[in-house]
Image (tube, rainbow, N blue to C red; front, side, top):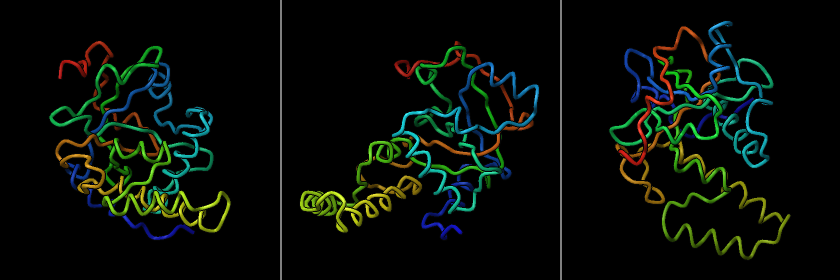
Length: 217
């Protein structure tokens, strides 16, 4: 059983929704898009996600957070799909640089049911990836750093600090928070996670060459 969420997922689902749906963009290989065209519905197997152990740990934390917010995986052994809800202020879709690393990418513009997507701050997500503490004030940061210096690896204190750090990561879901000087809400890069990709939710297919460069923004 999952605990009750300590972040307000519905607030942001409503903030970014129109008629109960959220407009977003997902980057993928053309072969995956062709498979979606053929099958109509796709989930993302864990084996298809990045196999970097650091990323896998961060993905597992995101999956647990989604579940605690009531956005449950449809089946075992799947990883969430990722999307952009707002790449940057006044630029919602991804940039051409975001397609780097993909062999033959396309961008799917989607309209997802709001209750099926969990939104988070892209920049603060790097704290989860890098196992950084999300401090709420300069005093909080210094207090955590001092405690880390004193704690011995594997000790009760170290485990407590690990839990404190993971709890601090929940700030990534509070999109209007001001911790770590991530800028105003209107300028934040917002990403989304959802479990099921449906052909019926695709509203446009955008070729890589149609994307603008980050340097042109």
